[in-house]
Length: 297
Image (cartoon, rainbow, N blue to C red; front, side, top):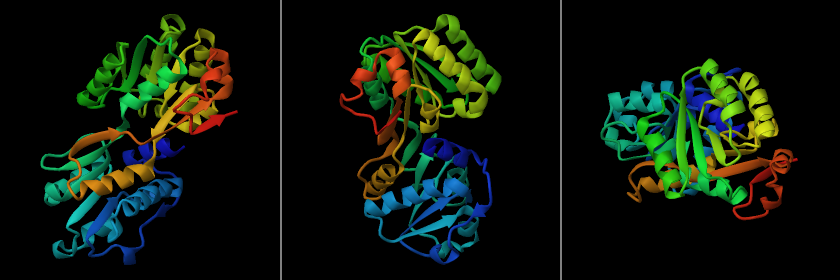
């Protein structure tokens, strides 16, 4: 449930007892990762990013919650600041120099920020994986949250068109609207159209949305893509999620000016439900590259 955990973490909806960064590790260093207070399994998402940053060459890194960082005086703060999520990034952009910030898992860059890694999956490898598993796909239907930035949707549209796919969208703003979009697949769903439930849509209420989606997907032989491995375990055909450690390593290279701007998450892990793949007649292609990172049996 890595990607779902990240999405919930960044939305500020936590479960369990809060776990804070070690105050002794939050101090004046060359670089700092500032994150929301995290709880339970969400600690793992931060830990993977830290590992990636260190693997990428950030060897003088401290890790702070927003509260601990805010309590520091300005001279104590690091010269380079990695920020996790839109809320923390917005706060830091208001109190300091945005040119020192690199945003991790954000939906947009704040004015003056040099670089950041998007919360959203790069659509090019997602579409590549769809076409590897099912070459008969002729269109992509993106179901996305209505508050997703327009440029993020435009990047998916551009990737679909580059791949020769027709394009359609449904924006949803609530569980009810997401449920209606799934219900419409009973009549509108087409085996030659891949339906990608973009980041956060199924997370609105997985218990309400996943069962009918899986049932309709089987009945209509639909190629369904989701944003979390947990949904594959529940019967969705394919999931695509970020490799957080690899993203941390990429973010480290932004410090040296290796790249700039907002990049979608291109370091991905993907999974497939074998039983659903068999029902759709695509299980024989699971050995073709790029092979899934996991196959749920």
